[in-house]
Length: 278
Length: 350
Figure 1 (spheres, rainbow over the protein chains, first blue to last red):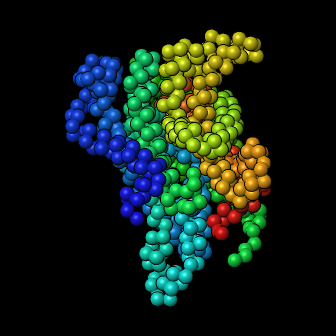
Figure 2: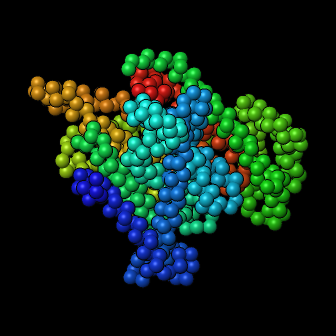
């Protein structure tokens, strides 16, 4: 199915991809076209949005539009990498457990359940608190290590039902190794599901990063969207009535995660006939 | 293929195993973390407090004299057996956790960690429980309503629900403070009550408390409504297209009657989603409390993290883990009893 056909069949998918594409271009083109340094306090403080500063400046006199561009870029990057790791671990754990069964399955399933029951944010807060210097990679690893439980569980249950199908029996008869069957015969059937889950995971990771950063436990050296909100909270943007300081940032986070949810929903409509009528 | 429905016993033995293991790992983790960090956090902390005190600086734990700090340090070493081998320290820590005694806070010396947590838990639950109950009811009705109305009305509401469910709690909190506190000056921007008032059951205090309660409450509830409404909407859409609903319609029953039937069928999965939501709402609320300076467990944990108050961090984390696990477990118990489908889903087999 071509991408154009996909979009025609689901307006949600169209809306989602449009919004997401907009922000990707915003981040990529923005940093080359709008060359103001987001961290240099070189302007008047708390300027309202104007032609020179499309989103005004913060209390230190830093350009908020430049901050938003860089923040969007970093948040997307962190979200995508964390989601890819989440999916890789989830597929590995769920797939191996579901396909091989037995003791391995018991152990992996227990591990998934443990990850599922951990109160994520509290866990992230406590661990992040012990790292004085936090690189973006630490944050990425923290986020993905707490979020693969749901993925592993659903992959496992899908593998359980797929492995009883005829094509798997045929593959077994032809003498391919079990690992090959799992990764090259069984898992490709879930590709549409993986893409849908990727959208959800990216949204979740962006949200987690923003939440961690907003309370001052995000990456220490970079400008992410959560970090921008952090600054607005710490320097009490509200007390100065500086709506331009926090409003666009939160709106960006919301729209990015919303677009990913729309993509997930749209794909669901296309691949899952039951949901199509929605 | 026929398969016996897994028994409740099987279901619970698995579930309990996961809970116990999670709890054990969480405890080990909070014990392990300070040991993985370079240096001795307690000694460093003590030195910092002394340095801040001698300079008169405003560091956490100021106002402690050198003697007090020394006593605090010795107390800590004794309490957690820091002068003993690692294995013994681990066992002492586990014992302290199981007797729910995590010693004295550094930042709020000489308050005990337990007392601090017990003070903050009611604030957190007082915010979360009503927000979830009211949000669940409102969200489900709104979602059902949107699904039932269809058309442009549904599209607008759906977009709105999506937006509500995706916005960060704390960003929404900022907007609430900006519009209703900074501009309209209807509600106070933060805190739990005016500090000049002493907590009592008088009318003035109650009104004051409610006016402080309203914004944090909204900022937890509104995003929750969005999530619930989306779920309910898609469930109702599915139910409305089912055979029994079509049959019902062809019999000429009124739409309202149909809606009430489909609602009841769709409500069960929504109820079973509550535990997952409880955990995530609890997490989201931690951040909201920080924004509003609300004296709940989130604000407490935050103060502890900022002040590097390790006993309080450990205690706060322990408390959150206990509340989340207990909440999840109670709901699991109840719903697995009500709905056999969950047991099947838990085994992950068809």
